[in-house]
Length: 80
Image 1 (cartoon, rainbow, N blue to C red):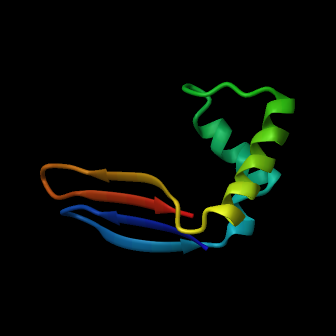
Image 2 (image 1 turned 180 degrees about the vertical axis):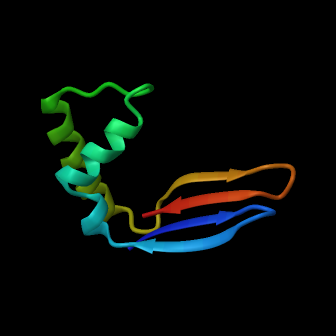
């Protein structure tokens, strides 16, 4: 399960997302489409990226992918 934790002044939420939802071709395509302004990946690169993500998920359970804390006390955390 992937943990997504968002705490701001207006919103506090913790979400557990199943890995199968995120680590498949459809989930990767959605993520890359949403970030295509910043990230460009070829078709062969997508397959390699998906394979690496699956390997890292097994090898590094609990790895923090994103951890942001602002001076106002807002927090965003994404963990494998």
